[in-house]
Amino acid sequence: MDNKIKEANFVSAVIYIHNNEREITPFLEWLDTQLDLNFKKYEIICVDDGSMDASEEAVRAYGKNRAKEAVSLLHMSYFQGLEVAMNAGVDLAIGDFVFEFDTVCMDYKTELLMQVYRRSLEGFDIVSASAMRKNKWTSNLFYRVFNHFSKTQYKIQNETFRILSRRAINRVHSLSKTIPYRKVLYANCGLLADCISYTPSQKLERSFSDEQAKMRRTLAVDSLVLFTNIGYKAAVTMTGVMMVATLAAAIYAVAVFALGNPIQGWTTTILFLAVSFFGLFSILTIIIKYLSLILQLVFKKQKYSFSSIEKITK
Image (cartoon, rainbow, N blue to C red):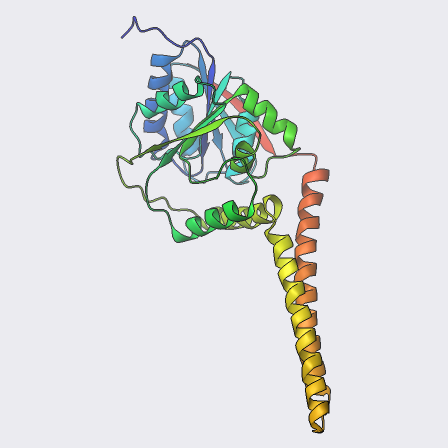
């Protein structure tokens, strides 16, 4: 095993941590071992996204006592969500290739790690691993709606982890001032991407805290508005409904007048105004959402906030 030829490329592994005190140590031990077996030089970056348990202490203990290479622990100032935290970790990474682990819960075999890496050496700047399992209906609905209304180069789906080339990272940063949803920008950056599907080795029940669930819902809505034309189509549909309502009210008024029946006027007027104002306020809501997102993406100088970066060595 000692005579095995190791890869010369410097790789970084960015790991997202949020209340994972039980899972982080075995995951670090596994990842550290695999990287040491296959690469001459590597780094591990753990991003602690405001954990309330002993996740930080677990990372610190592993880095001081058992790590084969230095482990960096990036402390986010407060809980800021998966996307922002991982962006911070990737910005800190200096590797030629960067692994992104959105979760430390493993349902894949060890060899998948190097399968993804070797696939990237075949000319793919972005390679992800996706489990072939039944997702929640909410996730399926989101991906179906998003892929239908978006114009990304590749369809997005659930992914367990991925590897990025340095060229892919530079390309994504050149496309947008901030990266609100990495998966979409990776799929639409213009570089070759691939996905390796695998059969889960075990069934994992991932649970999310209330703040994580809220962040995921917000991300889903923001992504649909920002990266798809669903808002425009909704506005067009609402405008069409308003036009139909106007036409129906006009036909009704003419028919009542032609039949000679007395008409009070207030029924059709109130009906028309109600539908019109409903459509108007729906359009205004969409416009305001767009404006708030544009304002945040264009004028917000700081993408994330962290309190310190801790380098842990023996």
